[in-house]
Length: 213
Image 1 (cartoon, one colour):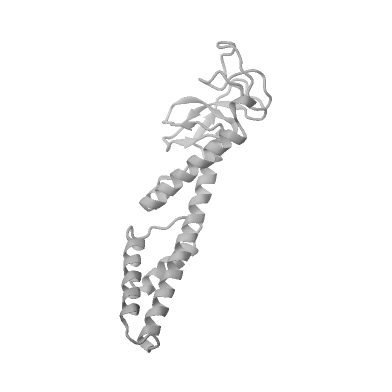
Image 2: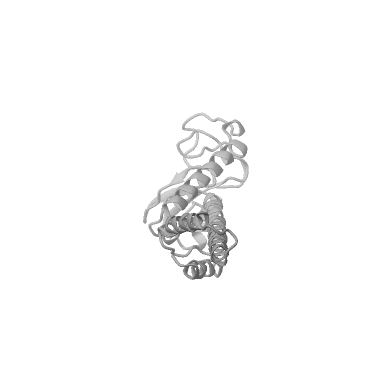
């Protein structure tokens, strides 16, 4: 791939806050080109010749451009991971625009953040156990009342309320602020963490049907 093409891709990536579609083999093919340039430099008998200088400058420009492209895309993927953990649904187009290695990075980072969040913020030791069957509905207020997180028998932390909602549209699985993965389909009736439900409600994806609300 020509240096000018890589620079055009980098410029496009810089101009938007979202991931752009890039050739799936851009890093592999460019890495191969760098290896060939390096071989040409070593094979040149005169290390101070104009040709050697041109080869070195070209290799350096390609390497710097690739590093910038990787950095910008990595920052966007990290932002998507953070937003996903905070309850913002991830659009299918964002996943499709990730290269296979980038998707692996996204999954690994998201998993690591979720695991660390569970350890630091919502560990089991921070919840008050309650007897099974004591409550019919999950917590919907902002205070701890002894009601349980669905299917866990555990009490949410203060401020981690739950809302009963009807799903208005199909969506990709996402991780809630409670560390659980939610698989939602249109017309499902579900209990969601208040923070996630508010974000989805703003996007007209779910409707709050909590009794009395």
